[in-house]
Length: 180
Ligand SMILES: O=P(O)(O)OC[C@H]1O[C@H](OP(=O)(O)OP(=O)(O)O)[C@H](O)[C@@H]1O
Ligand code: HPA
Ligand SMILES: [Mg+2]
Image (cartoon, rainbow, N blue to C red):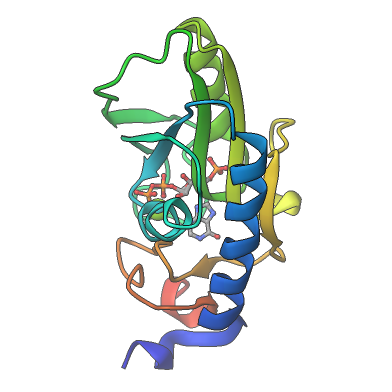
């Protein structure tokens, strides 16, 4: 049913799980002697966060922030709004921000500045997808799953107008779905 709106499957369910296993192993090794706080950025990062945390073999805590800047559009409004803040203090903590995608970079640069201001001890970024062609501010992740081309992608947490988050793979949306 949903598949009729998809132009092309970019990353299959199997490819996603294989990559996430590898990312989990890297983080396990890097944080063996630490006690990181994983901050999932809602709503998009929810499936990635759930799968990733199960692949990390280290003591950790999780928390979530809900920020939004796209609304129902395919380009960022440029204004990042906090819809829900953390319940946990970040002061003195090793923070790992967990994102589904870096596109313009505006969401993450806002969060990195916020956590610096709140005196985090260290801040690292893990993103499942990176779209370098979309960047409006300079920003690089410490751990990246896959680079994606200059197209609006959906699935595995990523939405268009709140839909398609429940697709189990990453796909490119048909242009006819959002330009009419
Ligand atoms: O690098 P950027 O251009 O800032 O784009 C990336 C952000 O945009 C999307 O979130 P969105 O604001 O759509 O909220 P959502 O996760 O609830 O869909 C996505 O999930 C990232 O958080
Ligand atoms: O390509 C995208 N798809 C879904 N959400 C997004 N948020 C930024 N870029 C994207
Ligand atoms: Mg969105």
